[in-house]
Amino acid sequence: MSEATNATNATNTQNDAVKNGDMQKSDVVIDVKDLRKSFGGNEVLKGINCQVHAGEVISIIGPSGAGKSTFLRCLNGLDTPSSGSIVVLGDDIADPKTNIDKTREHIGMVFQHFNLFPNMTVAENITLAPTLIKKVPADKARARALELLRMVGLEEKADANPESLSGGQKQRVAIARSLAMDPQIMLFDEATSALDPEMVGDVLQVIRDLAKKGMTMLLVTHEMAFAREVSTRVIFTDAGVIEEEGTPEQVFGNPQSPRLRSFLSKVL
Image 1 (cartoon, rainbow, N blue to C red):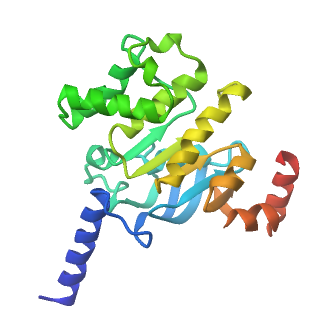
Image 2: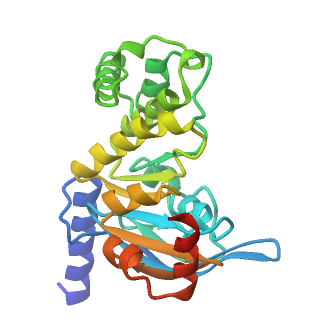
């Protein structure tokens, strides 16, 4: 067997292990190369290069219009890249031949707005995808939903209508719904920006608990203190490029880029 074949087999074995949740911290779970995205004549992402390792918690910060949310949406296949590659758990989701739906099963995403189905109970919102997509039996899906609701502090709301919940409670249900698919990666797109200030803490605590459990996460956030506390790495984007990145201590304590220093002076 050739060295190339051996290398390919080893890579495939590693990718299968990663998708099954058997990840090592050295494993690259996201590999982005020269990612570009344009909307009409407006180039929003201008050549993003980034690697994410298993267990990392990466906060993406920057001014409005910097491309943060577009970058996250590209990682989940919601926005199609104009060019470049995005290898997630071994699959290049920028390749039209890739089964994006299968890859997306391993990626949970929580949006600024909760998008819960108002005609379903809280538990039904959480069990819908596992039963339809993964064919999980209804009783097992219900038990898992209750377990996740317990984790986010909302077990007593299992049979409630989503419209009866506060914004913070809805967002915690949205997180539980994403976790019900047992993702290997979680993406948070400004998950607290639509909440009243007193509701933010409960949602951040759920994310904090996920970080302690080793979940790989990318967070687009305006919560600078939280980003400094929970992140293993912080990425500062501006005008469609990664302007600077490093540990929270480096980015917040010793920023090198004049643009980052200017940004932090306005938000800290």
